[in-house]
Length: 228
Image (cartoon, rainbow, N blue to C red; front, side, top):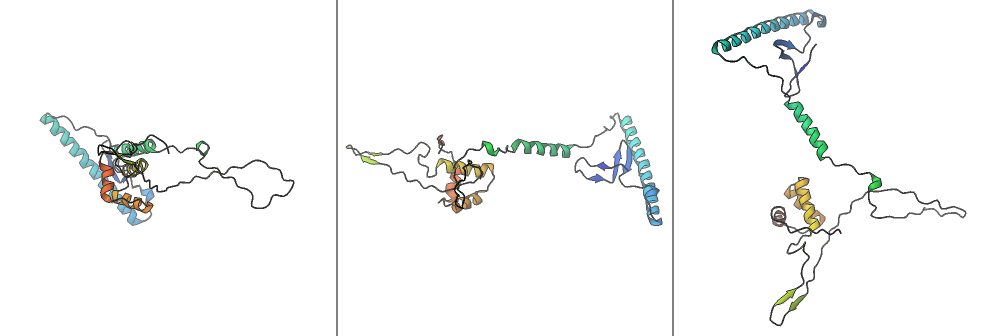
């Protein structure tokens, strides 16, 4: 038995029209019936399907004749929609485009190396055979509170000189790496502003909702190009 799938929803159509013929995805043959009731229901369904096909052909012929007499073109043969399939293909392509490549462990830079000795004492006569490496990936997040002590000098003419702040700081009380983290969380990871505010406070930062809003909406000073 032929199976027809809706191009928009992807669901099976029990009754469909293909090439001008009404069909069904359900078996209506006598060989599929097992009792008298099922046989009668199958017979009635087959008769209804035949009547529907006859009415369909008559209506189509009348519409074509009406269009010919009115000088209009015949109805176009519309192909099944492929929107659902195209949408699935687009989602797969988008996922492949945005998915980050997983780096291999052998290419990761070593941040810290710790040498471990056996817990038991090494007996005499044992020979040293080098090291066996075991790699562990870890993340370290810590809060840094920096105090810039700006020298202040009073000139003979009454003016005051202050030590200049770094270019990436200016008058901003939040460092460049913290600002980068906030922008990454909000715009790339789609973390909402209330959740981001709670996250920063849980990490130990003193920041108000207004300050966070300014960091996300107002123009930022240039970030430092130096690596820490």
